[in-house]
Amino acid sequence: MTTTTANTTPLDVAAVRADFPILSRTVRDGKPLVYLDSGATSQRPVQVLDAERRFLETANAAVHRGAHQLAEEATDAYEDARAKIADFVGATPGELVFTKNATEGINLVAYAMGNAATDPGRAVASFAVGPGDEIVITEMEHHANLVPWQQLCQRTGATLRWFGVTEDGRLDLSNLDELITERTKVVAFAHQSNVLGTVNPVEPLVRKAHEVGALVLLDACQSVPHFPVDFTALGVDFAVFSGHKMLAPSGIGVLYGRRELLEAMPPFLTGGSMIELVRMEGSTFAPPPQKFEAGVPMTSQAVGLGAAVDYLNAIGMDRVAAHEHLLAERALTGLAEIPGVRIIGPPDTVDRGATVAFVVDGVHPHDAGQVLDSLGIAVRVGHHCAWPLHRSCGVPATVRATFYLYNELSEVDALVNGVREAQRFFGVA
Amino acid sequence: MTVNLESMYQEIILDHYKNPHGRGLRDPFDAESFQVNPTCGDEVTLRVKVTDGKVSDVSYEGQGCSISQASTSVLTDLVTGHTVDEALTTMDAFVELMQGRGNIEPDEDVLEDGVAFAGVAKYPARVKCALLGWMAFKDALARTSNEVEA
Image (cartoon, rainbow over all chains, first blue to last red; front, side, top):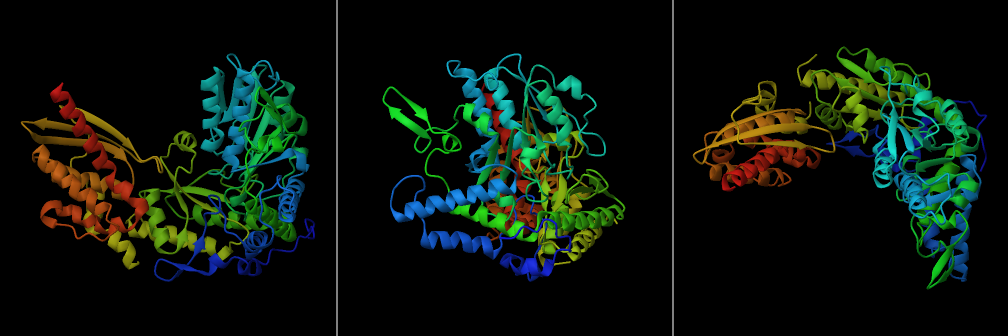
């Protein structure tokens, strides 16, 4: 594996695409697939598929139990993947917990905090949440970073507060000092919005949160796959991301937590693997990350995520980001030129990823999506698990195109032409 | 434009979408139902008035795609003026058509303009859209009879 983050040569998209068999299929009566839904789930290169298959064909066994050779090899593969993935996000292996997905990672933290609150005997002050405490999120959160906190507040009597969104799709931090106070226990927010594409400023939120002794959880689902991210440098306390949004299998996600926090935090799921000593009268727990990985974990998926990290490293995340920047620019320009199309999110590419949501006057997003689908273009329509954000933007739903390293500029043009076609079909152009 | 798209968006559907029948919430009514499609946020509020065992008025408002809006418009045509039993039979036929994955031959005598939705049944993601108003009708009607019994 070579790290080529300093490589600034443009991405060879044709070569990348050759690694993704699904991109050469056709859909809807022979139309070439134009896959613009990587924000929902990305496609997987043969390198990832092969790594999973190779593991299953040669080394599959239950990890962290058993002393036979396969068990050793499987455990090594699992832990090697953890080390690689940790390095990819500026963390150490002991700070990286494998979960089913990012949603589970956020729930893990929320439930661990709830557990701390109901178990004062072992509670660590910084985790216990109760009446009078506040949890601060933002109105642009995916439901995964919203509902678990709502639920934690309901269970513990804490209060949920949130930052609003400005008209141009940025986080409104004008009331930063009012929202993040001595009462705040957690500040949880998306690194990059899964609808607006906005890349949020981590630094001021981390600084303010730490000033008042609050913990910061970063939802990095839409950032880690798309540009270089270093959790240690960002100074966040927790972060989550999902494998399937970064060329890896589904069923594998990551929770990052600062080592001392993971050591102090009570477990979420309990059972096998996560224990140190079990007696009928009570149990003690393994050190992290095992403390948070109860049961036989997903192994080929972790190996697949490790292979995805190798793949992205070989290309270089700077080059991925630069390529997506070009795609976003082309999409924003092309869509803005169509009368009746409104971008929901920042109109320019400053602090913005290649996630482009929009509405078309007179054509409901479902209908626009159907026309695009008939042309072979796969986009997401609806509220994209960010219903409150859509309400605050005054739209029931949007069309969302999300781009990744394997998308070509010509696919952006296909999208723009497809939107014009939808307008023609519904007689609004 | 592709054949597929036109098989879904029949002229009848586009006509109902652009010129919906019975739209707007009206008094008097016996029961009201609010239904939402959680995957896309489309919603409908629908009221039912039953007089002497007949559906005397169906009124609604909502926001949603052409399929959900047109299907609710067709619904008002199909059930208004009919007995509750007839309305439920029609509803069953429409639900059966929508859940048939495109393999059911609709009976135009029963479903009238509703037959235009046969193409929609081939798109599983859109079936919920087509049924949104009907689910509201079913729910409102159930509330009506509950209230009558009570």
